[in-house]
Image (cartoon, rainbow, N blue to C red; front, side, top):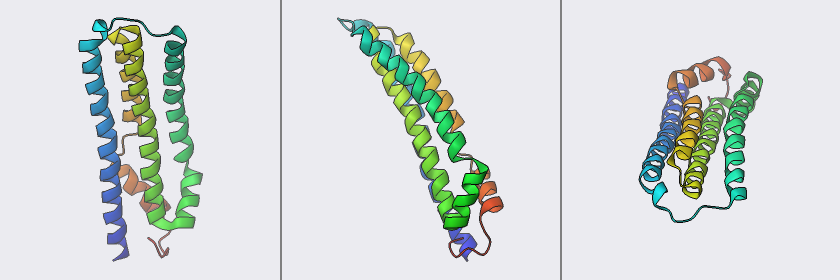
Length: 161
């Protein structure tokens, strides 16, 4: 019975994380389309210091997403989470980390849209969308991987597993 509860929770949390990641990918496509059709029609350029700050923010969020995922999905950390919180806590940690990395990917897309609007060049959004999609694909939650992690790391005699 307890295994079925964990499996149900895993399915629900995985579905939520996957919906958020796919939603950010759709947001990137939408922002890219808007930038393509409207960027050249803007009448004035933005402040160069703001444009540079957006570019630096895009780079930092892109790199930060990779670092965050690598540290939060480290095997030793996941073993500790499983030992302290059981299978339910492990699945919750997988979901939260995936959502946090996806939010960083979405932030890259939004900053890229601002960058494109300030420079009146839609290809800047294309570059940022590329970085965003790489981050979002990198954090895409594969259910089989989540199930394998829970099976390998969750303690079998845990009251929450």
